[in-house]
Image (cartoon, rainbow, N blue to C red; front, side, top):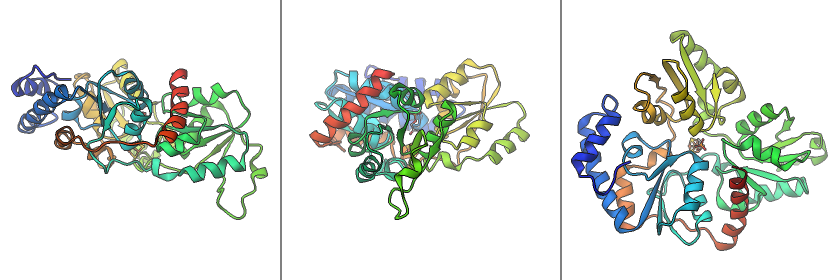
Length: 350
Ligand code: 13P
Ligand code: SF4
């Protein structure tokens, strides 16, 4: 993080200490000027900047007051006493911040920062699921829009999904919308899981009464691309590599990895383990972001797999965001109130 008190040169020195060898100095100089202007406006507007672990390295190491995974940033959004929250992440994350802090102004630097998981399910789909399985609690991954969260009983993130499911203490749960995350949770808890097509004419809810989890076939367009073949090929080329995968990867990929966890959990694991080479099966920026904290460790990269949504957020757009107070996130009050219950319930579980 950098502060308002730092000049562009001091910001450059800070970025250089974190990113020399990863980003050319020339680029860092330009980014330092932008970060300097952003810091001034941030103070003027009494704003807090939250940055997801997937932000590009120069942004990640300069302007956010807090960086972290979805769960940590939700907590930060709920706790802040600032007037404005600038969310350097995707739309559903900024919406979650608004749900938790309805009286604050929440801004997101780009309107194009969506998410394939959030787009995979609608509030109508959830209503149909609830009608088909009356009384069965619905757990939603936070990677959904506010109207979907409003229809659900409790949210979860990749760092607490199994704990949330277990906390319900019931025989059957509906878990939406990530097919792979739900399969990974089911495998971890030893639960049976099925993915009924509730919109098909042949769908009969009774056919699924024996399953402990009812899932939804949404996918993350980034994590679904990693395969066991990729892992085998990397291991062949680099025999001493440690492979970490996000739980949005397929169960086969998770099984073939050395560790699986949320973005924060992957960062922690890398810093605590002794191996000399790592491959993170997730958005490529993560490897660059943690390289400076792990100078003796080599981060292998598979950067042809990127999140096109997270990559919409740049320092340039963040500066415009603060200058023009754009783009403000709005969530209708009734939806926000109902969604807040699901998110708060999750935060209480931790
Ligand atoms: P985390 O909650 O692990 O930060 O993941 C969010 C996400 O969108 C991963 O693709
Ligand atoms: Fe959504 Fe996948 Fe991008 Fe995460 S990485 S924001 S789940 S599309």
